[in-house]
Amino acid sequence: MEGLTPGYFALVMASGIISVGMSLEGFDVLSLWLLIICASAFVVLLSLTAWRFVAYRQATNDDFNDPGRGFGFFTFVAGTNVLGVRLGIEGYYEATAVLLVVSGLAWLVLGYVVPWTAVLGREERPVVATANGTWFIWVVASQSVAISAATIEPVFETGRRELALLAVMSWSIGVFLYAAAGVFVALRLMLYKFGPEELTPPYWVSMGALAITVLAGARIVEMADAPMVDATRELIAGLSVVFWAFATWLIPVLVAAGWWRHIVRRVPLRYEATLWSIIFPLGMYAVAGIYLGRADRLPLVGMIGAVELWVAFAAWLLVLAAMVRHVSRTVLFGARHR
Image (spheres, rainbow, N blue to C red):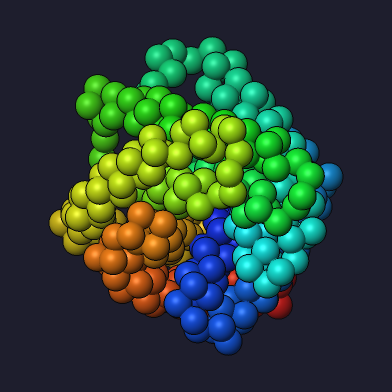
C-alpha cells in the first residue's frame, strides 16, 4: 500500500473512456460492463489513496516532491471527470455535476501545489532535467474539466454561461500547458542522457493529451449557444483538426519508441501501473476521432476512431489480465507466505 502510485487512476481513465467509445458505437452491454469496472476501480482507488494518505503520510509527501510521480496526482482529476461524463451518458447529470465540482477543486489546488512541490520548489537545477511524460497529465486533467463542463452545459437551465466559460477557459489553459510541457520534455530528450529505461509508458500521454484536447474542442463546438462559445467556436473547431493530425502523427513515433525499448534494447516488458497510461491515450484517440468526425462532419476521421476503439479495447484486456495476475501474485499469494 505504501508504494501505491498516484497515477493509478489512469485505470479509471482508460476503462471509462473505452466505455464512452463503446456507448457511442452502440455496444451498450459492453459499455455498461466497462462502466461498472470504471466506477468500482474509482471507489477502490479512492479508498486506498485515502488510507495511504493517513497511514503513509511521508510516502505521499515524497510523491508530491518527486517530478517523476507528482504529476500523477492529476489522474484523479481526469479519472473523476471521465467517470462523470460516462454517467452523464446514462442521464445521471447531477452526478456529473457533483464530480465536476470535486475534480474542479482538485484541479485548481493541484495546479498550484504540484508544479511547486515537484518542480519549482526543488533545490536541484536545472529543473528541465526532470521533465518526463507524466507532465502531460496536467494537460489531460485540464481538458477533462472542459469536457465535463461541456457535457452538462446544455442540460441545466442555470449556470450555462459559467459552464461555457469554464469549458473554454480550461480548454485554453490545457493548450498552453501542452505547449509548455512539450518544450520541457523536448529539451530533456535533447540535452540530457536518455536511455531505454527512461522511455516509460507515460510518454504515450503526449498523444493522449492531444486527443483529449481534440475531444474537448469537439464537445465545446457542440455546446449550446453562449457568448464564450460563440466567440471561439470556429477557432476551436479548426485547432481541433490540427491537434488530431498531430496526435495521429505521434502514434507511429511512440510505437517505434516502444519497439526500440523492448525489442532492440531488450528492456523486459512486465506489468506496471503506468501501462494504463498507454491504454487511456489509445481509447481517448478513438473517442476523439469519433466525436470530431461527427462534430466537424469528417467521416474518415470518425471511421479511424471506430477502428482504433477496438485496438484500445484489446490492449485494455491484455493490461487488465496482467494487472490481475500481478495483484494475485504480489498481494494475495504474498500475504499467504508471510
